[in-house]
Every structure is written in structure tokens, then in C-alpha cells.
Length: 132
View (cartoon, rainbow, N blue to C red):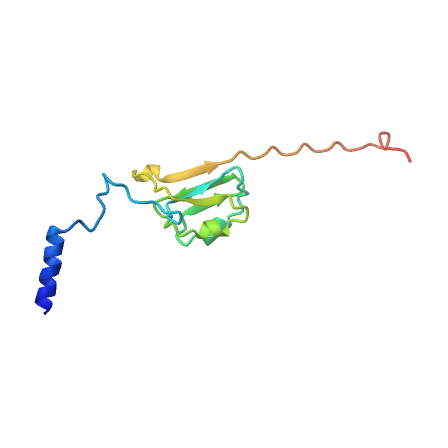
């Protein structure tokens, strides 16, 4: 009996449609829940580092003083932990896959300029003090 089942499987595989998609000619469907890559809206980022602490693959590096946010796309496993941990929700998961590339191009660095330090208020002298 198993010989007939095996023969049926072999014949179906030989003469039937392919089980996989013809990728270059028919791209795969992208669903809403597909996880492709992490996207950061750097203008909203507060550089708290909670995404870096929650990342199980240690793919994210945040420097609060230099105001930089960096992700190593080769290390990222698209687990969505950093997106869930972000307190200001500046991280999101897109359903586009990163383009194939070499190692040097896979580190994505984002940098935001530090806001200028507020000017110190001049000291008020006794002569300029408001009178009551």
C-alpha cells in the first residue's frame, strides 16, 4: 500500500504544478503582518535606549550624548521587540524587505543634531531688581 502512495506522490510531483512560487516572475504576497525591517522616525526619537536594551540580537546601538541611533541589519532578526519597547513609538516595522547588499552597506546610522543649549540668563543686580 505504501508503494502506491509513494508512486502517487512521485507522479504528482513530476507532472503537477510547482509547489513554490516562481519568485522572479511572480513576487511573493506581502501581508499586513509581514515583518521586513525596522524603520525609525528619527525626528521623534528621544534616544532613551530602551530599544537597544530590549533587542535580543544586540543589533541596535543608541548614544544619548552624541544623539545617534544605529542598527546593524545583519544582526536584526525582525522580532519586533524594539518596536514594542519604544516609549514614544518612533520605531515601526515595515513589510518591505531590505535590498540585497554587502556588509559595509547594511549598517544604518541615523543622527540628529543636538538642540542648542539655552543661553544662560543674566544675573539680576540690586539696581535692576523690581521694586515692591
